Length: 161
Image (cartoon, rainbow, N blue to C red):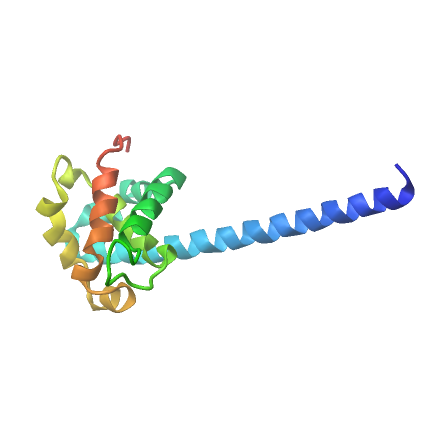
């Protein structure tokens, strides 16, 4: 390989490293923002619904919203938020509603709700939906489907904490 090709290869490698690094930082910020929103919701839940929401188990439940869960919820969002599936579909993005799925997912790990359907525990979750959450994400009737799906999907997972 001549000197010019070696220089180009080095330039391309450096450019690839820079692009990869920038993409990694952007992904990290997106995850941090989603976890910040989730932490805020957990605080509201703790105030309205009891002690479990302030435990390490609740934090682990929130953190167990992994890539597989994220992909399942994203598919649900895409299938229910398209103009074809709902003429009144909103202009929200999945990133806007991800914390709602995470909130439901976390609730699905609450031992007080073990073996219970979303319909049975919905009133508890709705009680935690204060004015601040409504102004950020929408009123309960608008968002309950996202929370309900996150809850129902999480109850299919093993409870290992």
